[in-house]
Length: 474
Image (cartoon, rainbow, N blue to C red; front, side, top):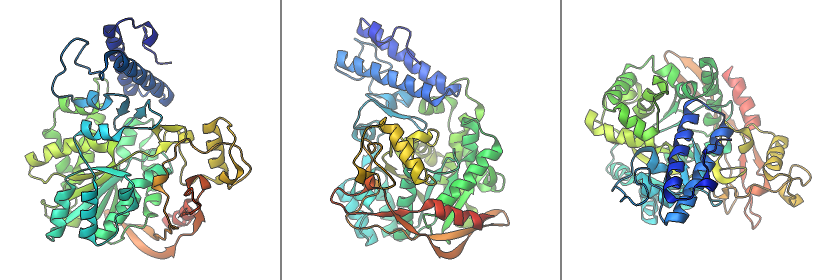
């Protein structure tokens, strides 16, 4: 159990509580640096949040790392502490909150310095595309942005832009939360008719997880099957593994080096919370995730163009990478990437954290069977009874998740997905995708994901679909 030596109960003064929070914060960083078990890290984070709540109750204000009780707060928070302020802990690897309602996204917008996606912007997207805005926009799943108006300006003036998103493959299959940015990116590609690059950061997972290079690369291939299933335009989509592409694209590597030269070690420590015990691969990795933001990283697509802006749909925990990228871009002569941020899909255990591929019991994977889903829901709810009609795959055994984000999958009318399958081929140096004229089947979604009024939606039968895709990949 990761506790502070003189924990919350033993803090008799605000200063002692302040020092306990600082010590617990260091413990969280230390646990992450030595790759401690996820349960141990989560326990330490929960203790940190609890201490901060006690501090706020005692002092009437949020804990600030560089402002002990009685000292005046500086004008600007920075680095990792800025994303830990209040009751939420958000970085690219951990999402945790003490609130049963989940992350306070309005506060997160203020801390990260992004802009809220308001009705005016949604209406402008509708006018520009001539299409009804995606339900993820209408329902606030994508809630924050950086420079989306610039992208719309470019589009309305017939100037090109491209999309960039990615996946860090840490398991053989993706879970339903991972689909959110890909489903939305598919819509963006359709309505704007633009190229898309998808980065598989198998190198990142090798550096952060206890995986071999072969395992990390294998996960990238398996995850690509789920991504292909979303039905991206075969003529405008490039999916690549970092482990493969870095060695065969001088343009990509040149941009990595340019970024590395313009970001100091102190900056990445402040942004990502790296410690002296982290391997140098981790410290240099942010430049690799930043490089696809620049069109010159893909000369086979954009030739020698360096002026094409990039739009990145991603979960907001990835924003630190692209704040760094936006800071560097003007100094190396490139346009800043624009971003669209999504909320997190909650874990089965509740909205205090997000679904994680590293914790199978928190997630519903795209390859899970009905029996596996039932077992996970039962475990998450500790055997609480549930009405039989909410368990379409068998007898009532457990309650549904306490706060599933039904905004992600619900419609007022049935939703049919008919993505096209693709076949992977190795052609020369680059991964090519060839159209295969088939369509996947559909199945009725579990009732816990349906509208209260009884409307239903259909969803991917990813298990049978992946079997078909797997046969094409051999």
